[in-house]
Image 1 (spheres, one colour):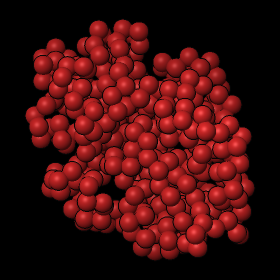
Image 2 (cartoon, one colour):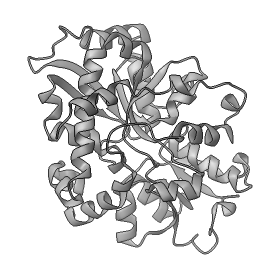
Image 3 (spheres, one colour):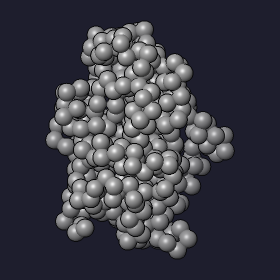
Length: 357
């Protein structure tokens, strides 16, 4: 999610080639400059949100909220944009291209030590929703994270949360970060192809990629962090991951708009908690199932336990994330992170009082 200074994202490079960061920030501000009046095309207050992979099940609440009409009912005209990795969504946010990002909460800690004030305003999850997969060829040799040494391990992007978590699992199990090679392979077909062709020995990914790999018998699960229990076993506690996070200054200046976003997302999370995976799949765009709706519903079912029902930060979650990042990230190891500034429950608390369905 981070590494903005390196501009590894092609999307970020293209953005910076077109306009300066200042110009982009001004453009983003103009799309939702005031809670009382910034309108798009008559649909409501315009807000742009970048998602680190719209078709990933871990970020499902973003598109589902739109499909359920909850943005519209709050008087919002939300434009959902997509990048293949959370680090690119983060880049779009801090450059001012968008007002919000749907990605992992751990970016807020990473950015704070870089001097960027960003906070989670709706916490979608209490577990990473990530799975460490190994190729069939390597399965006999990689039986735990202790065997990561000398291996090529796939992540969505360098500096992404999959990169963070892979490094933590290695260090926790006695393997130095320098002892293995992270390879940016994205998700979906690119991840699967890399696994099948031997470009990676294993890697960290999410559903529906996981479900497809298992269906194709292209790999095996090494670690499953799609449930709170799996998070506890692998990471030692709840790991708040997918969230809506925004720049703190923007939040403070647009509280009415942020409240409307929180209302819409909390309503979606409550809806998800009372509907089946099949019912959820039915609401999503047809192409998300990649021609196999049954398999897509299975992917949703396996990931559903990670989601919160109210958008509230899980107890002790920020502490677990800080512990994970401090294990391998020298910037955070040597910094005092103010966890209270990395998230807020102000908006979801009000949403809980006003949301009925």
